[in-house]
Length: 538
Image (cartoon, rainbow, N blue to C red; front, side):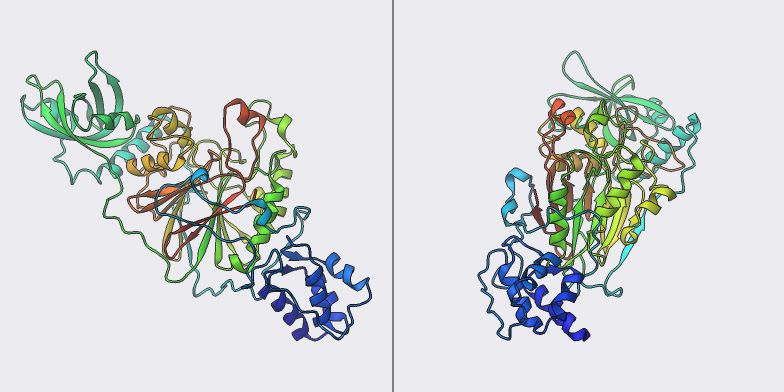
């Protein structure tokens, strides 16, 4: 059959907002009057269709009238497709302020075309005419801070000393220019009444009988106590402190030089003057996490709607997909998890996940990091998957890197971190500063501390390496996390903080711990403006 006939069919359907199966195109091109047959197929499509399938064409051909010469006229107001040819599901813009599902408008399931019955093994390639650029001269994707294959830690005492020394040195360098730093031992030898300053790790925080706060800082020479008076304007900052984070304090020594009274406190923080980078063209990235394939509550229908949408003209500018961990449900992660599994073998879970991944258009660049449900070590930083799992997850040659990693898309840096430490931040800090309902505010705290998991010895498992891979050395333009299964985003000193929800409905375990997930959301970020659109597919 002439190539131009098949190309014309694909182009025509694309312009009307449809994707199409290859065999359906072949059958349409083979009839005597392809144009008339195409019009009859479109006329009879269910109103929520996004993908023209072989059975749609077969239904017309079986009627025997697909060979007619008169092409039916298509109604531009047909439900499911707007008059401009775009799919009926419209994007919803988000403001630069904080946003959560309850505060953002998203499309309802009834407006989302999709194929809930589509098998996960059905592969969708790059759709001709979709408008998505695949020009390698326009695209760029760089990875930094990937420690996969670089793990050297043995768990010995010296390893822990080395990683904390590295943390103090690198984060301390961001603070020493702001205060006249003195080591702990030098401060102890200074005369009473002197003005002093120190950069150190928070070793302990406790309240006094009078309601003041005593903060003990530690550096490479020793420890020194600092007293924060309860009536000072910065006293509420003590509630934000986590053990092992790095900060600086200035104050005045007591008469006996045994303690210092705090006058000011400094965090490594993101400079208020930070100006994010943006792409030179209009291009978008989808930021998702926590797919949890293998769980009985994995939302395969929502995932199918999402991947169908990625094939529509409305999604033509989505050229990158970033997945922030928990690709599968895993095995033995929490008590009685086996009772909630749809796929009980961990390798089979990844095989099924890979089949679902094949539904993503082949011309979208993908980056994935592991999470705490994935088959890697639990201690952070987590290296990317081993060779066996990489071979299983072969769809579209996705980039698989460590948790955390810095991914730069056309000049826009995205810090990807799964987010286990968010549980600890939310548990330790007051609700107005960190909560599950507003997970991005907990992320603000990590940006302020310039470390994704500052507290050692708590719920977050940390592995000592030759350097601290969890430090936020360079300020990212976007900070992307998952883990808590809640959607929330906002900007902190011009850094877009995004927690992207999940693709798993509420499990019995989540009910027992009062977690009500935000499921089936796909936040879309314009890389040229850092504006956010939330698409809902559940």
